[in-house]
Amino acid sequence: MRYKYSKYTGDPLDDLDLDELIEKLSDLLLSSGFQSPYGGMYGESEDDRTMQALHDAIMDALFNGGVLPEEALERLLGDPADADQADARSKLEKLIQDIIDRMMQEGFITPAPDLESDRADRQSAGAGGGFGPDAPPTRFEVTDKSLDFLGYRALRDLLGSMGKSSLGRHDTRDNSTGIETVAAPKPYEFGDSLNLDPSSTVMNAVQRINRERRERGDYRPTAVLDSIDITYEDLMVSQGEYQSSCATVLMLDCSHSMILYGEDRFTPAKRVALALANLIRLQYPGDALNVVLFHDSAEEIPLQELGRVRVGPYYTNTREGLRLARRILDRQRKDMRQIVMITDGKPSALTQPDGRIYKNAFGLDPFIVSETIAEVAACRKSGIMINTFMLARDYELVAFVRRVAEICRGKAYFTTPFTLGQYVLMDYMDKKTRTIH
Image 1: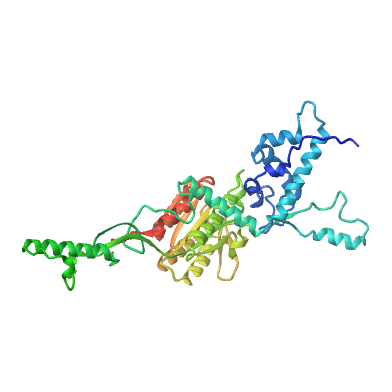
Image 2: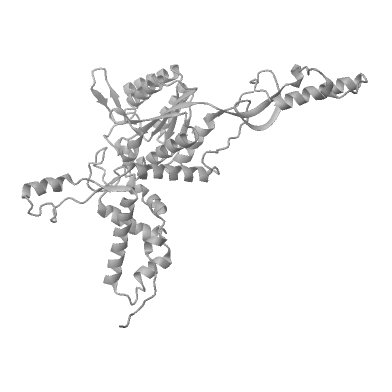
């Protein structure tokens, strides 16, 4: 019996970097409702996070994202001039399905429960309902592993762009007398923390005693002395980094303007929040981070749900977000307490004492502004700093944000979705190290 052998070309999945692919798919996995602006805050829209959307995103990553070498694509598809196009398409479809299966096997995504199909199946009593042309599209859900991975990669990329890509060892510019020694000891000066360097202090005392004895003509070795007297001028202190503990509330504006005007601003904000959470977990485990969403009203969400949240109602209730953040921080006992507010709009809503929400989206309403400023003053009275990261530059809005920064002695950053991450992380790390002289 004769056998026909062909050259083994390998499995295209062997050439695929799945981690790189997941990063390329981050906009889809962190979807904020930009493609379906009428979706709700927790993913009620059916226009994204479908298997078809995932299929299209993977295909784009294969051909335009560089996740698969060109040689592997050529081996898979062959020469377009003389290859069987139907066979090439079937191979491509099989590869994409294999990639989706592998993403599921490694725990990056899970199929969403198809409740509508299940209901249709029960109603049709096994007659095939839920699989016709009018059946809802098959959807998928993003897992906690995927969100944690995307936050880690965002943190690595942001720190790498700032020249600090070694996680867990982010150097700072300042040295101070503190906890961890990072520089040569220095002579003690009035006001320094008394973090003595024993060996340098004793050596200074020995050298001073030998110098004084030689001046008197005494050349006995220092070792024969019963004791060494240490004076003020002998003291040497270690220079080190003092890491302050910090409690942070990240306030994210999820009003509808964050996905309007042809730009998705909420997905970059979520990516920055995930990176900040990974930074705190990896480098500053003693710090606290809470997340508050503000829109028509405001609510705190669990950190693990951040990657799944989408834009919500239309208005911006900044005062209610600040009030909730202040209540959270009042429970914290840290060296530093701060609010990091990411927004692109002016305050346009206010929760009244009876629970009703007063709304006015036209200009800066004096009533809303005055009540919001009063809450900013309450934050300052509680010792809470507010740093605002603004994604818009309207004249009236810039003036309002600068007023907020002036009252609470915080900072105002006017940035874009592309530079937001660097601003947020640099601001956080700069405040973590204090210089004490």
